[in-house]
Image (cartoon, rainbow, N blue to C red; front, side):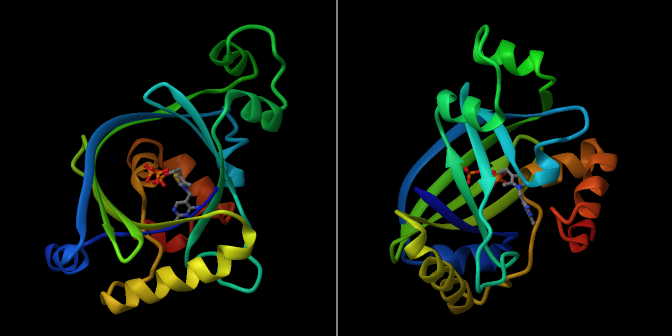
Length: 201
Ligand code: V4E
């Protein structure tokens, strides 16, 4: 599956407008620990390795042709240890975590999230609150294959515009974590073009 998503920093009014008529689906708390090498080999390529409640996930950026990639975030998600080992070309000796450590990967941050999920007009809307008090909303569609990508992107843009939301890039939870805990890494991500310079504001 390919995840097409857009994040928003929502005012109270915007959140109310977005959730009006939405169906509440679930709430949960989860903990993400992100990993990278000391020279940020992954994140400087916009590639994000994390363990969510202990389960590994790798987000790999997908370059979209014919549409402004910065408008909407698109990542392929690798969800099995086997796929992630292959992608990272990780030698297989011990446990996954031990092999990661041996290849120089270490934690670059942990975030605890309380998430409420809603559904509206076929879109998933997540409202996240972190343990540090940061909040971000997300509108998301999952598509089966690349053929559905452009349409999904247009649908999210249209949905956001109908709810009078601004389609500028915003700091997600991890971007905010990096900015506050490791400004040097944050600047490297901007210099590499992974984060737009506007995220500094
Ligand atoms: C892809 C990415 C990051 C990792 C994922 O972070 P995020 O989507 O904030 O986490 P979450 O909990 O919402 O994941 P989900 O539950 O939806 O799977 S951290 C930074 N990025 C990339 C990124 C980018 N390249 N540019 C901008 C403006 N923001 C984020």
